[in-house]
Length: 91
Length: 359
Image 1 (tube, each protein chain N blue to C red):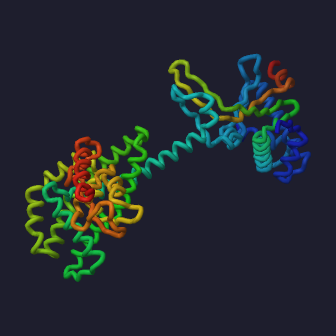
Image 2: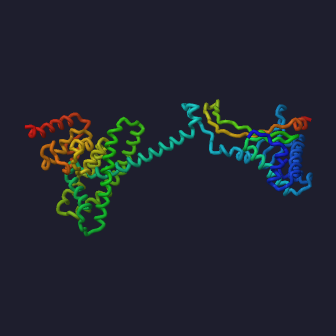
Image 3: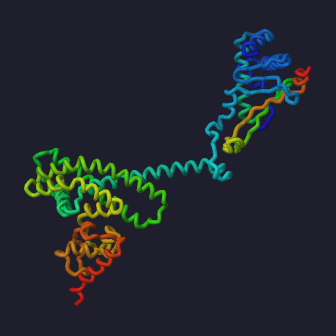
């Protein structure tokens, strides 16, 4: 399922134009972006949690070649599915 | 920071951005994620542009996989976008590298700049020295020093009326090249004697730049100034110098270069100094010994400055301040500070000079 399909389904469900849905979706993505940049987590009931984790810089070693790489710090956006979603999928 | 944004806050933020009502935003979020979870429960993967891809995992312990979109990942990691993964050398200390990464990079840059500046500084005087030294002929050195003095005097104190303006310009050029090198090379000479124990890297750079200077100077020194030099001399002072110049050009041009290259490696600076630094003035705190140490590296070689000026100097201990003395070239008296024989001869010479005044 891609963005287009989701937008058309949502516009049917909510009863608004796909243009409005598109702008709402964009707004949602930008809020997720902002909150994640602030290292905040976003909890969506019934679906799951978007968790941001900051990793410090680290050195990894390639065992095959023996080369060492210094990786810069980074923020990782993880998703943790809620129990409801897990149940739904496993059914 | 590390707060948990709930549905209420999220819908508020969205409504603030879009202008839609709070309830619409809330409904939208609920419906969106309901649609996604429906699709996931059917086993489909959902990819939303700008957000990422949700996928059902094959492993039971992690039911849903989420891969953030590249745009999203990049904008979240914007604060660290200036860093890149760096491959480490084997002998680098871990902690030092991590802590001082940025500062060490800055240091490297600054040393590079320093080296560049050094090379620029080294390059200039050496090439000039080569320009001068390419004019040196071991047999004709006195003549050439006289010629250079004539050149300088022509350009500075007395303003000769020249028929040909282009000739005068060319003289100006040669004199200009020689003039600034006096101070530079003198400075460099003293610097060298002070910091002789400098790092080997610096020395390698110095030698590299010296060789570069030699090559540049060789090209400039042989082709361009010689022609100009001969032209200017023949036009301005035909009667005196034609024979000398011819002999230089005709017989000695090649051997001059060989001599210059051989001796330059050891004595570039002192040669050029002695060739260009023609006169100096004695003052209350500047004696023959001071000059000798500056130009030849040892105080004892004052005897040769005395020898060069013995017509105007009497008792070496009673030279009047303000006396202008000529500085001879190092080759003329075989002055070599590293040669013990040369030092011994100078000492004998000093005794000879003092002998008449000790009675």
